[in-house]
Amino acid sequence: MRDDNTNNDTGRQGGIRVTLWGALGNILLSLMKFAAGIVGHSRALVADGVHSLSDLGSDLVVIGGLRLAARPEDRTHRYGHGKYEALATLVLGGLLGLAGLGIAVSAMSSALDMLKGSVSAPPRLVAVIAAALSILVKEGLFQWTRSEARRIDSPALMANAYHHRSDALSSVATLSGVLGAMLLGERGRILDPLAALVVAGMILVAAWRILQESGNELLEAAVEPDVEKEILEIIQSVPGAMNLHQLRTRRVGPRMVIDLHLDVDARLSLSAAHAISQTAEDRLRNAFGRETIIYIHIEPGDIVSKTHI
Ligand SMILES: [Zn+2]
Ligand SMILES: [Zn+2]
Image (cartoon, rainbow, N blue to C red):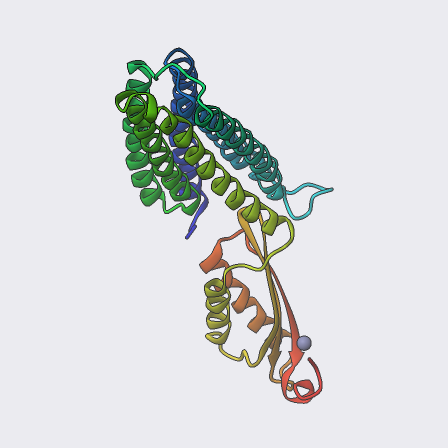
């Protein structure tokens, strides 16, 4: 819930700061994984490195999106610039999907080569160390981001926190593949490309979620059913509000757009009817933020309610 602008700004600053640290972590982790994966003969670690690189991309979208989407509305963009974030995220989701497919194909072909009997060098200790370090760093980032998200009550930041946790799990898969390939001898080697395949699967699931979410926003999807229910309850709490219909909702970046038809007593004066819709708007903005865009179409209830849809 966003009550005033000062709160909102410190919240955004904190969100940007923890995201910047996450981005720095992802730069260092991807460099370390590429180097250790190549030197240490581990496909799984290189795949995990691609994952960290794509995470860096999503950090940049979050940071850039927070900045761009916060740009005020101007003469040519009367609804603000909130959809920049969804658009950038859609592109990122597409790139992530391609990266996941690329890793999956190369991991499968190397697993098939091993099954056909081609011999490969076992992973080295440096790959184990890099995977273990990645688990520690990502778990730490998860704990920190989650506490920051709780402090400023930000669902976007909370989603980011759980992303760090899933990255830690991706490195757990990598670590077990590398360890198995090192310790189980010739027959265990295949565990490394299999771990790369698991990592690719996790990347593809993440890409699918990102594409779905940003695609929904671009296609003007309605907000979640509980939020619509909350809107109904708020309107019903307004004195003088009668029947509500034609409720339509969508999101433009961080702002919600609500439009609806509201019946009021047909004998009311125009200013009394307007006061009812003003109260409804105020209560909705108190609940969903000052920036919420609201249209309320007032109708004379008892006359048209039987014929009008
Ligand atoms: Zn990730
Ligand atoms: Zn109507």
